[in-house]
Amino acid sequence: MLLPLLFLCLLSLASGQSIEGRWYAAVALPTGDKAFFVLALERQGGGWQGTFVNGPDRNISSSGRVDGRKLRLEFNYWDGVLEAELKGGKLEGAFTRQYRKETRIRPFVAQRTPLTKATAAPGASVEGEWIFNVERKDGKEFWLAAFRQNNNKIEGTLIPVSGDYGTLTGWIENRTLLLSRFDGIRATVLKARVNPDGSTEGTIDADRFRGRRPNGFGQLPDATTYTRMKNPREPFRFSFPDLHGGKVSSADERFAGKVVIVTITGSWCPNCHEEAPLLAELYESYRNRGLEIVALGFEYTGERERDLRQLRLFAEKHKIKYPVLLAGTTENATEMLGQLENFRAYPTTLFIGRDGVVRRIHAGFDGPATGERHIRLKKEMTEFVEKLLAEK
Image 1 (tube, rainbow, N blue to C red):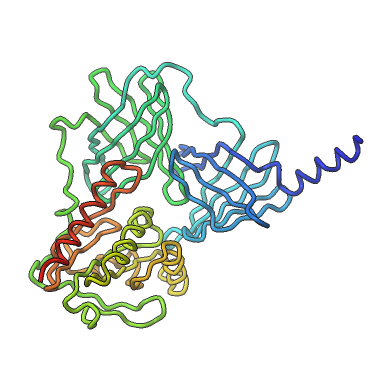
Image 2 (cartoon, rainbow, N blue to C red; image 1 turned 135 degrees about the horizontal axis):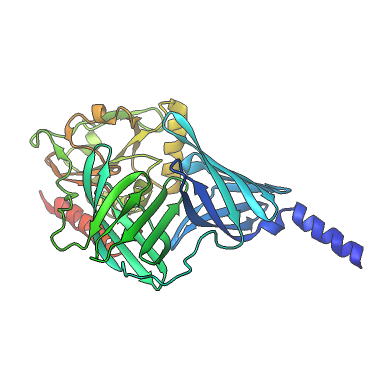
């Protein structure tokens, strides 16, 4: 019976069954750091499915296959692909995706045991909220950060006005904090030291920061006043092609006398993917009462067919029934949105009354990783739509 059993074992390896299950993975950043996450692999019908796991967050491949020892997972909504080969019990390869005008390649490795873990006592608590003063290339910004701690284990997120980073996971030992995330778009590493006075300092990728508890340290930007109309009295105008080539304009009859939500979005934007289900729900609930929604998509490449493909995938993924327009690229967005002042966040969402006046502009979107903030924002947006619809 030994030969048949050996044959079955070899067949199992060749068919890729040996890679099924949970892998502890990492991708390399240009800084030399590694962003850690979990890769879960499972069979799906005749193919394979891979999931990037970051705490409670899940990013699932659109398709996948195993050919002997080689794995290929496509994440079509990110315009990305993970390719790896099983070598000596490890998966080694790269995650490749289009990033603006370049092809971004991140070296990838995964194994069955954790790639990093804490081995000493925490030394400090980071539980709760912090204000981070982040030094970026274009100036300093104040961000909110929120963490949950269970002994050495940490989960949390970073919340700049442009939208949260999703769930980061990691550990703390001897006052040293390491958190990271990879979801196919964001590869983020936070490294910090908690000082004896309760402050913290470190880096978020290539940016330095200092942090303290919220008591009087810094002023967080207001998402509802961050971006403004240069002339609040003029109507917001747009005229761009939809996904089928037809022109959709703010002057169209369908928008006259309606409450209109305009979301400035992109298929590459994680926070836009988190906002889309809420907008789809609002459209279903209030369309018959006079709500219209339109998405202005700004894509990466400037290659018309490729950008249209990505927006179509975005619309299909979220079952969007309102118009999605190809408005331009991230490089010319500021020019195309010349009526706006201080436009810097995707998504940025405009709420327009029946009179055509922009009543509110909300920069960014607080996703599920922000907990109560996410629930509160969904409630506020819904209530504001109801208020606008009630106006005659």
